[in-house]
Image 1: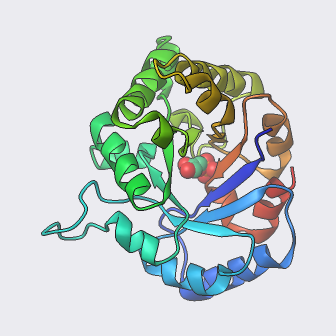
Image 2 (image 1 turned 90 degrees about the vertical axis):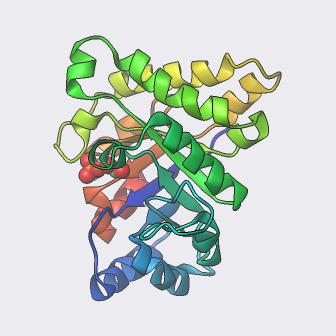
Length: 249
Ligand code: 13P
């Protein structure tokens, strides 16, 4: 049985004061799901100070594909580990589209995260044009395959996968629970069909989150689907009340 996981992706939002209020609100009430927040880099110390000792985990939104060196502006996985991060998002569609991240880069980032004991939340998803062209499975399958190829089966067993259709991110348009379930089932099937003996077991245990306009009023239906193990929440993770409502959905 996979426990539900709800991760907030704050994106480039927040301030010390706003985060303090948000984190206090999230800490104040229990949630049925495991909760985590992925904050901008400068606020990781604040998350660590505020959330250490609570049931709520924290993480970053990106990580360098390099371990150290002359890479101005980059943040390495061992640095995230020092700030107590449990998770790091890799391959979010905003990184893929605005920063030119390729499938290979995303796979390397997932590997770097694992090497430092972090759980990479590998994001995949198709654009509206790709969906309308009937390419959804080909696109998410290709994005997933790069990660499967780069990792050992043991490492693959430690990742979280997130399906985020690009057309549903920040648009208020959610995939229907059936649309999302179909892609989640496809992704789990792809993991299960790997050549390693443990592939089916790894697939059965892999948390696959849905992201894209998840709100308190649609979370319960999405999370009721058999292959949807929780959510990756953008806008609604910035309000403690909404984030907790989703964590309890
Ligand atoms: P929204 O929940 O704001 O649509 O964002 C989803 C997302 O991109 C989470 O990573």
